[in-house]
Length: 100
Image (cartoon, rainbow, N blue to C red; front, side, top):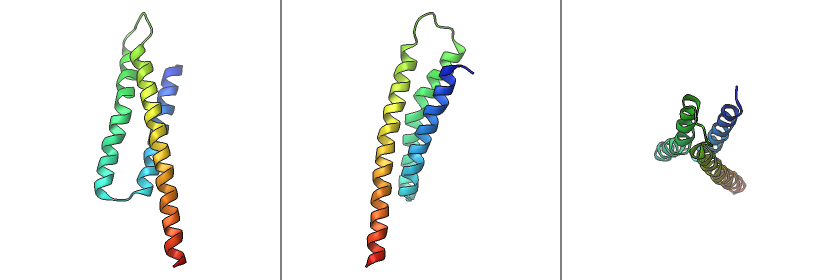
């Protein structure tokens, strides 16, 4: 398996982890549909360009693949930070409601 395949799988796994954290902290049917749409928006460019890179034999550097990785990483980090904030907020709200 080549490096970009391993990197693609790791990037998509981190994106999935980020959205799983958000999903666990916000259990609402309308929000879940939005989360699935946002997950597809975040993961689709990288998957498409990784498959395109595997099927095509480019002579030069594949700038689109690099940009897709950067987009997915940035998107994943933002989603991860939002997920952690929501999880901490949910945890503190649960602790406050238990104390009263």
